[in-house]
Amino acid sequence: QVQLVESGGGLVQAGDSLRLSCADSGRTFSGYTMAWFRQVPGKERQFVAGLTRSGGSTYYADSVKGRFTISRDNAKNTVYLQMNSLKPEDTNIYYCAARDGIVVVMTSGQYKYWGQGTQVTVSS
Image (tube, rainbow, N blue to C red; front, side, top):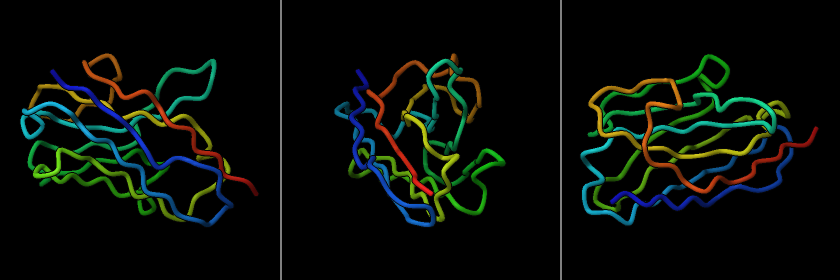
């Protein structure tokens, strides 16, 4: 079973960087497509970034292209989200997610496993 635990959120100033980590306690991590979503209270979760099982293909929301980088280390059962040049509008709760499909999709309902969420707050 996939169990995702997130870390790395916090309060930063605009222009700063953060790296979120999501560790999986399961033994089949390399078989899952991974993604990051974010959610403002009262809104639906929105796709941020995703990558394929080997990490060979990555995908990003237009709002974060050029600033965020998703990667994974299958030997460590961990997926990362490197966030650079943070903006106040990046303030959100961030979640990692996993699905057993081959391709990255951008709909939250297509992901079966979720982390607990970590708060990222960016001040002006």
